[in-house]
Image 1 (cartoon, rainbow, N blue to C red):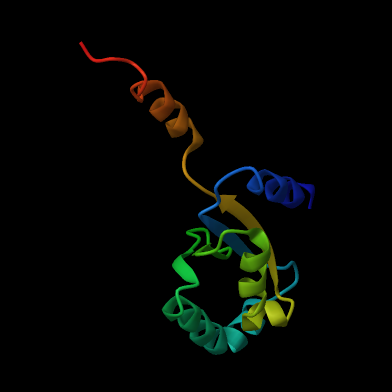
Image 2: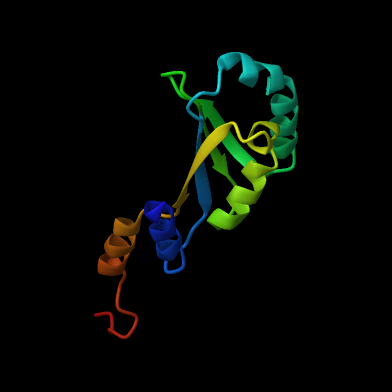
Length: 122
């Protein structure tokens, strides 16, 4: 949990453009329980996509969950979106949230290559 609070602290000083949500079934949750709720989960997920809340979504290749890229600028909004889904309402999933933004080293590159507007041209 400290990783999440650390990530939220970092968000306040950076330009968050989206949040990754990593989902996996909680220990002890059976595939049968998940599959019983999956039709409602799919409908709700598609609606969030159509509403522009979900930018992309993937299944993990190891079969252990999903990865969503959400159109949100903070973890709290991402959490609110993901907790609105049926599997989350049934407390079947663990969630991890990772705010992301522009690649910071690119700012250094841009700062080093920008011409000085005060210099005279020959």
